Length: 383
Image 1 (tube, one colour):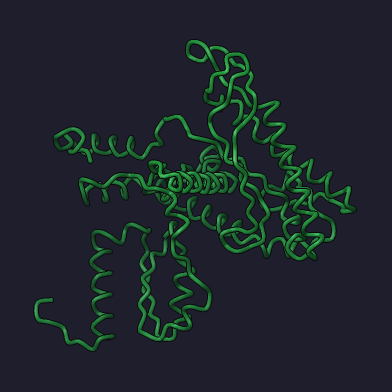
Image 2: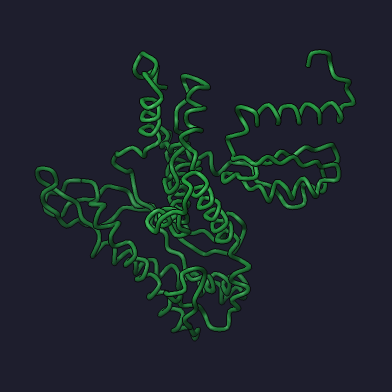
C-alpha cells in the first residue's frame, strides 16, 4: 500500500509504522446517517417472550409508543443544522427523515425487543428551505437524554397496564439502578443475556491484551475505551452500517464501506490490540488489498448451529489461537471435544499470529501430519 501510494519503499520502520497508523485511523468524513437504538430493560423483553399473545402484543405496543415519544423529543430538542460561513449559525429544522426496524432477538438468539431508527443525515432548514446535514454535536450530546425519555415513557405506558417496577443493580455498574419489572426473576434475565456475557468476556480479553502489550493495566480513560458500554455501542453502530450498506445494495447504489482493522474502541471488523501488525501483514500480501469491506457481508457470515459437531463423522482437526479476541476459542474447543473423531491443537497466540513465522510453520506441520494420518498416506521424502 505504501509503495502504491508514494511510488517508493518506506525509508525506515518509523515511516512505515506512521503510515499504517494513519491507514487504521477512522476517516474524518461526513456520515450518511445516525443509528438511534431504543431497547427496554431486560425484564421487559423477558416478560414479552414468555407472556401470552395478548400481553406480548400490549408490551410491544407500549415499546413502539415510547419510541415515538423519544423521537418527538429528538426532533424538538436535539435536531438542528448549521448555516453561514463555517456553519456559524445553528438553525431550526422541520423534522427528521428515518426508517425504523424492530428486532425481537439478539444475534445469540436471546429475546431482545428493540428498535433501530436509521436517521438520514439530511434535514430541511425552516428559514432557507435548504437540505443540509444534521448538527451531529448536539445529537451526540443529547442521545442519553433521548434514551432516558424512551425509558420513562415505556415505564409509564406499562404501569398504566398494571405492571410494577423496582430498582435493581445490574452488572458492573453497581452505582446506578435499573428499573425492572417486579416479579420477573433476575436469574432469567441473566440467562437470556448471552450477548452481554460474550461482550464482557471479550472486554476482559482486551484488557489482558493491553496489559500484555504495555506491561501495565489500562488507566481509567483507557478502560473506558474498552468498556462494555462502548463495545455494545460499537456493535450496534456496526449493525447500523450493515443495514445502511444492505439498503444501498437494494437500491443499486455504491457500497458503504467499513474498515477491516482498527484500534480497540473503533468501529471496525477487527479491533485486536495488535491490529497494526495485522494491517501491515495484509498490506504486504497484495498491492490491491484495501483496509475496507462492505458490511452487508456481516449478515451472511456462517454461524455454528448447536448439535452440528456431534454429527461430524469424519476426522476433524481444530486449531485454536488461545488469545483470540476475534473468534471464540471456547466454542472452537467445545466443537473439537464434541466431534466423535475430533482433535484439538492449541497455540498461545492471537487471531492473526497464525499466518506468519514459527506459529504458521508449526500449524502447517500439525495439519500436514493430521492429513497424513487421516488419509493413511506415507510421508514423501524431502517434505
